Amino acid sequence: MLRNLNNNTNNIRIKLKKGDWEIEVECPEDKIDEVIPKILSAIPVQQQIATKENIRKGTTCKDLLVQLWKEKWFSQERSLFEVDEELQRRGYHYDRSAIAHALTDLVREGILTRTGTPRSYKYSQKYPPE
Image 1 (tube, one colour):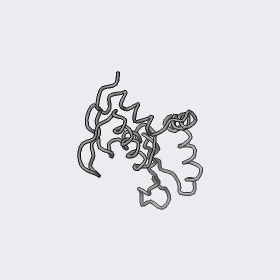
Image 2 (tube, helix red, strand yellow):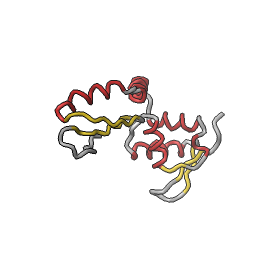
Image 3 (cartoon, one colour):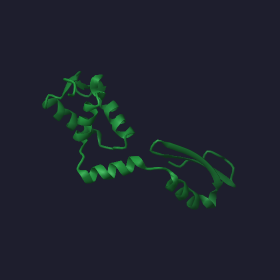
Image 4 (cartoon, one colour):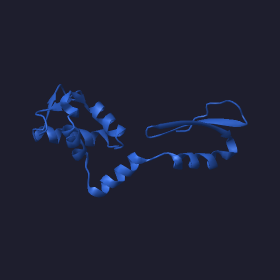
């Protein structure tokens, strides 16, 4: 994300956010194309690397949800929004409909239970992992 946070015409202040990192930098406007790639290349991208490795291993959204269950993350009721936020925090970006389908599969398999009404379901573990 790029935003001009400074009204000074000589320099521009930019806020960069990548993963868990957030950086502000100030530089002359004509140097932006040079400065930003240097900054971004210095930020660890462990989340992206993990995502690429898991794609190669065939990790699916459902696999990630089972992992959350194994970690007892579903010991508390969680909404679709909360599940999506947790996956994003871990570096996985799935469409919410894909997450909802995977959650429904886990409910059908008896791993999770669901309470509430459509569009406001809460998911929790039906039984603890072994």
